[in-house]
Image (cartoon, rainbow, N blue to C red):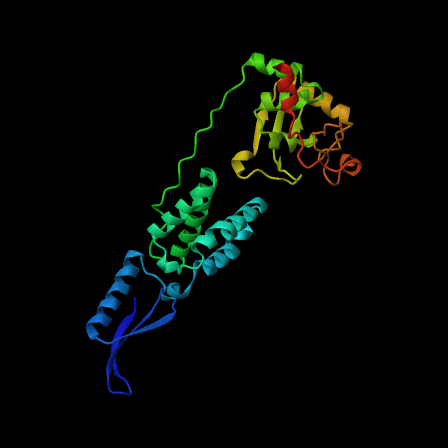
Length: 308
């Protein structure tokens, strides 16, 4: 760091020592002290901080957390999915800013953040609190990168433990009973059981995703509540799954019942409970019937009840 300490005299004849330096991006700064020792100690701290990677921009003392949150979102949101933008906006406006928005960025401390987490725990589920803390940590990681903080004060703060959900796998006999009582939803249940898809992924399947020749099904999108369809959250969700003959036969019969043809590659394979085809905006199926808000939202319940 290029820094200097220079003595000067005020109009009243009092001595002052000015510390002048440039930060890593070249911006000039100055801070005045009444003693030479204090000025030299300050410059030494600045130099050590830059060498150790803990240098903090003096502007951080004037920047509130709410102001940094706005800057952070603007810089980040272009790379976020619509669902992420909506979630982060809600987390910041409803929880993070009410708790921490008025605190200057460089005055955030682990104790302050732990208190915010404790307050959130009183009214929110553990998973929600963990998500809030995760968003806050990301926001403050970027503040460190921008030299507003030397270290992330949220880094050592732990989220509350999430209760473990018990997962019970169905036996082949139970799956058989479900299929026996599934009625018009038999194809869906076969897709869920035979391919291991989530309901949102099964609801997003299009005719072009089923490769009968190579006996595979491609997972390329998922359907959200409200009818929005987009790609999976990560590239790991994009996959090609081998399909057994029973699944392919059921899909073929299901698509034939919907009147889907080879050229309807963008038409979704799901139906409403009234058997109305749900297609993409440009497909014949879509023009005949708009998509329901939550396809298959209650598919397995009737079958489960009938199967006991």
